[in-house]
Image (cartoon, rainbow, N blue to C red; front, side):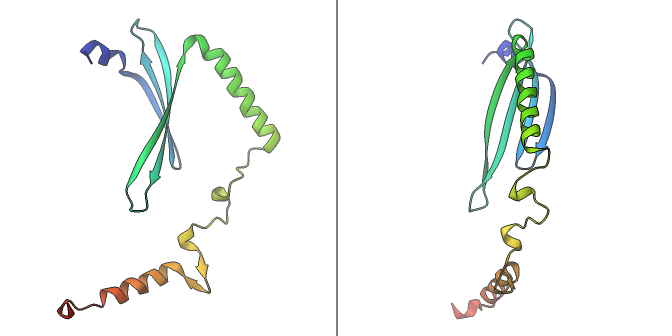
Length: 130
């Protein structure tokens, strides 16, 4: 990629919106002709069982000629959702009494305490026995 191509994709103005596991990036960029357009990128973090993670990204390119129609449709869809379902978030994760799996208790025992006692009994091994 040449120096000019790199300059064409430089960010002119940016904003970031962090929303839980998702992050939204709003970036104004420049076309080859020197006009501006908007990119909206959704980045979502995924964690693997081994603790490693990766991000999935989705990007929308929005050009000035589409701004008005896009904004009208977006406003209409958001208004419809609020009218039909209200502004309160309906999601298990967003409920006031939501507990992460680690916080649940089984048979009166806290999982974290059980894991700690398992770890403690494991660490009671003497390496002289090996």
